[in-house]
Length: 344
Image 1 (cartoon, rainbow, N blue to C red):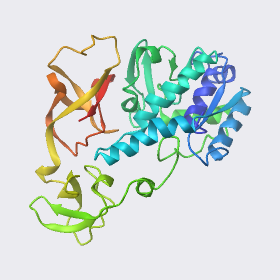
Image 2 (image 1 turned 180 degrees about the horizontal axis):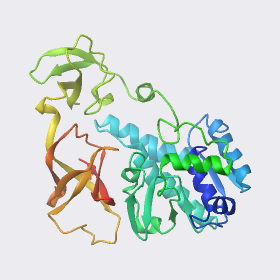
Image 3 (image 1 turned 90 degrees about the horizontal axis):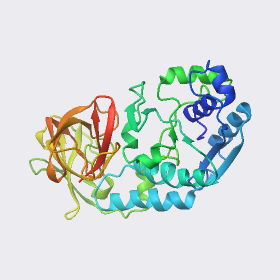
């Protein structure tokens, strides 16, 4: 229970009170315990924890706080910093789900005697398969491609069949004090931070040149590893006729190349990926190749037609803007999420 609307409604729907108040729309009557994770220094008794405690009190369910700060720093923060240092763009939300929520947290929950772990993720589960949520604007299947069958059999996603507006209505109906609370923004379980400052506190700054695709110097930056492909803001380039985006970066020369949105340097039709994970019980090598499917390379991107070939090569029907190494590519068959990989 993060202290937000979604996990609070999930807990309510699964508890006896929630099941009865929702007219039995979900399987109700579970013996529910609310767990709040502390993942960062300074979050020991913040508003999110207090809100989670208040919701648990309204639902009359036990409430515990688990301190996972050491695990989060090792598994998520250190990974994130090492990826930036290597010039890639990490996805801490994917890693937090893999290593913390559905890794360490789930293992500890099962050891404590739980049969299931429920979260407030907007995703639908049917048997051994995962599907996009009813609310396509809130669908979080993109962040869950690393899940395994051993994990999924213990997972419940009670709000995947609701729109966000419906979840808020349920929260009001349950009398939850977080019904009108705004959605959280920022780093997974760390909260709202100035991300640029956050990274610069850890990695060294190193002045370098910003070039256009035709080789013209137009500015300077403080370290190529701080920037990601497709980035527009934070370049400190005034006086440009049109917005420019990071199209390429070279850590060896500490150089960034930028281009305008329509510039071909920002677009590619193929990528290579590694560390594949397939959700369903498929052969070790995944689906038979070549494999036609749909894919997205960033959260909320409309699904793109693609073909997966041997060697992790993915070819898109249309050119894709700002393919960023280190980010996730996630594969779909319409609404069914098939699995994913890391862009190489």
